Length: 298
Image (tube, rainbow, N blue to C red; front, side, top):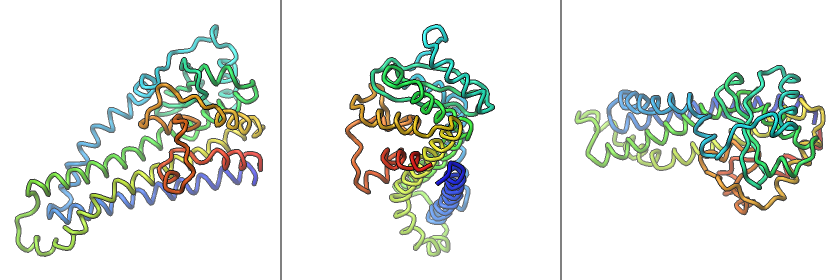
């Protein structure tokens, strides 16, 4: 498999997943609206609520993530090698240089955030800076810069909004059903009898399905960032070796949080990397072994 084939394949699969997610959201909205007998007005109310939440998270997500990670701004004087690596890779990738942050933590990890390349941030733990060789750290930073260049942080924000909106719709539906909400028109009640049963099932299962799709998109973008990063450095082995060292490190990130886990290059929850198919469905990252295998096949 070539780097270009890998990039093209992952872009197509990400696009199909996103389109499927949007269609799924529309279907869930329709079923829940019909079940209550309100038409699409119910969806409109719920979308206004989720939209306000999304607006705030879109513009302040980088600050929120950095705060939750316990990151601090890194200076060129304090971390000259990291600064130079990010600067050179940014120039080579034709993108604005992001702000650089460091997390004082012995665990090995890194992430990127920000709504677009002009407002991007890359962060690395002191553990990864101390334990990786320069060529390996270049692979990691190329991966994170690829997330920024590919607008993965924005895409995952959109996907999170859709998943969150589905959860809000389902929660709103159950509350209105509990309190006797819904249309009082007898014709509508008869017409919506089947939709009511279907709506209850959807309200229970849709948020779970949305989470599975969200995680699938996240895993697909990780593969894409691996391939794009390998193209940027022209040395896939650097990132492959880095992933081996990161996966072999047993120190868990102190500020690990489920809300921000998908931002990191590797699952920050050490000891929770079970390989069962059920756990894999809800994992934000593809298996490290698969990522390394693909990188070494390029």
